[in-house]
Length: 305
Image: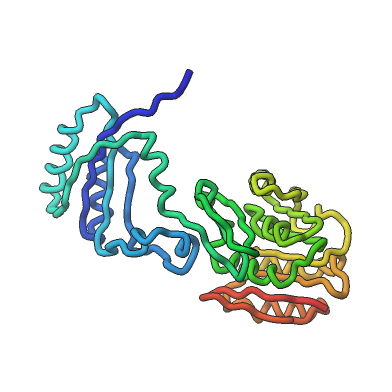
């Protein structure tokens, strides 16, 4: 049977940001399923900062809103009166508004806030639903910004993608350790890599990476692996690992068996205060630091023999 979308009444109350918690308590009396709009701590530089629509970037950070949705047939008027009464008794100044919402439209609305993101010189991360005509020489990677991490917008991912643009050559063999969404392996494949092996300790991440690779028309082998334990044997031309400092440090003593003399190793996800520890451990393992790339509080680096 075809699913029919429903109509809802949206009741929204807007307060000064310091009163948000009290407003949430009031709205929860009507329903615990709330939509909260609070941009006071939105990070303009991290995660989705560069993907966000201008309406978010320019939002008033001094106010916050909470919405509750009353299904068709529900008594929305009674809900509004109840909310206003509770706000008054709690001494909370709020602006209350009511609007009609169609669920089919509501389900698509959030997508308007995510736009194509240009990284490096050639790479463009495009939300799956967006139409985008690439310029000559650009490579397009289609991802879902609804995923928590691995859409290209975070500093650690941006830096390493920029490095891959310089490193991947036609036919190169690439290893992506801790692949997450698979974005680095997908970028490498689109940059001309001949073979790509992507691995992650999380089976769900591996499944997502495989789906993303297929959606982008990339032939990438994805496998579950605790760091290097399950990596396909061989010497790779390019290795990338966008994880965290502690895990990179743990990986470095074993990475040599997957490298040859000209292998370019890129590691990222390193908070600035830990960069010296990573370079020191790399030196102990016979690897020199070729270059560093800093973006806000994060460091990515190229290591090699």
